[in-house]
Image (cartoon, rainbow, N blue to C red; front, side):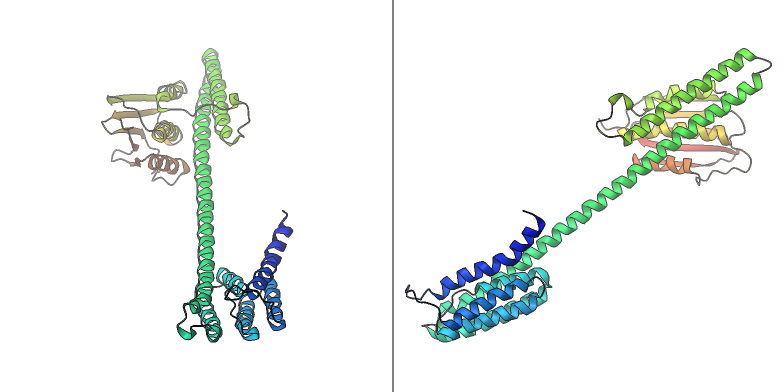
Length: 374
């Protein structure tokens, strides 16, 4: 069914059903005897059903009209109508489109009015239990309408919350990919820059060693392209070739990372203490990236090529310390994207990261990452 067809069904179905039900109700006598509706009752039935055509645009006015026609039905023929369907539909619609207070106020007024109109025609008079029928269907219609509106509001809140969560996850993923790109580019460009400087320095006096440095530039640039391809591959579609994706580096690859820096001319001293324990998934990548970024910063901002890396494997966490002589005037309080990215990675993995200048003038990065639980 098309959208236009569904709207037409919503508009026309209630009036048609109202006419059918009301005709049967008017014709049904209390003693199970059939009689034809009077002309006045027929006019009121058609008027109430016609008013329902406008219930979505003017719910309050339509409710008032249908209640008035319901009041007039028993008066027009001296006959009790057990259920005013038009008023029920109008009250339900009003409750779904207007606030709760308006809906209940209209429901109470309708219940009192319809009951008062029916009392004179009840066999038992004021104390006849049948007097409760008009009040019941009027108030039940309002209750159902309020419940339907509350359900729609709840579903809307759930959809809004889902959309907000989706936007938050997209933002977090963008930040994570931006950090990965920054780490990869900054690390490898620093290595290429260092190797190019070595090659330029040795070009005339030691051409063989210069060629080795150029070969290192080639290998480093190839590795950078592979890692960039792997990072950008996260944005590919599911049906892309599987060989276009490569796994992200892990902390187990940190020795290869350090060796790359050594080949670029950095003097890196590594000390290990404790028994290595596996890290969490996020912590494993964070540990690798923190060492990578700290060594990259050492190459860009350090006064020399000496860097001290200490890996302390403890029972519940891994402590990473990277120390290098800081360039004069460089304080490194963490205002750069690299230091901010390292801190965000550590916190996302459930750890901490601090950095700053020590008393001897060297710059230190200290990260603590939790170990995986057994």
